[in-house]
Figure 1 (cartoon, rainbow, N blue to C red):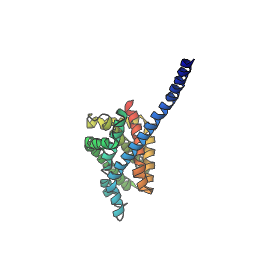
Figure 2: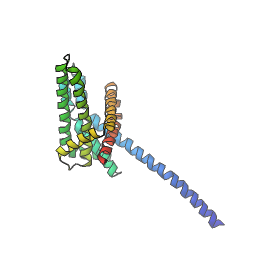
Figure 3: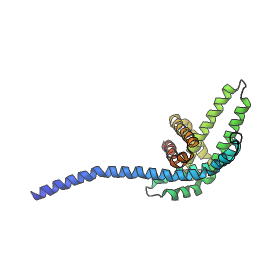
Figure 4: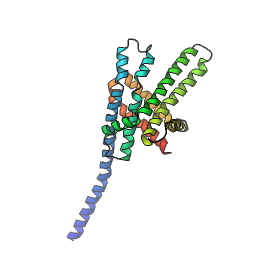
Length: 233
């Protein structure tokens, strides 16, 4: 009788442990994502310091927008390093976030800087062209078309950042083409990433500290998740 009672107690204990184990793993997983996102957000905030300083110090930021584009160049390597950290956390749960951000920065800063430079150059061209055709009959046609091209390029850039983290040995040209193809092939995911980025920019403009340090990593994680899902197809 005692043996039967002990066996029932063991079964109940095992059942309780079985119920608690998934909850514990879920909690640890969520905590890991939150902690890593906050650390990545700190890295993005540091990379945004030149841009923030330029906005504060320049008397008329709107008229000095080409200079602001130059100051935004460090953001590209920071975004890529954040994607690297998220990718390594998926490959190995015990990967340290700050350590992986540093490694990702060393591994990807050159191609990431090149990609973000292309985005900034395209932004410059699009703004100049829109100003040039403003008030002409071509504005209704060329304006929206140029804006759509720029938005696709921005989303594709984050697709390239995710590709640099997932397959760092792939050639740069292949990374660019892959990021563009995935952006066009998955319009729903691309639109979601674009909405998240637009909302983040609005928050950063309203509350810079909250937007950069607190939310930057979470937005980048969501955008990276979309790009990583496209990579898996």
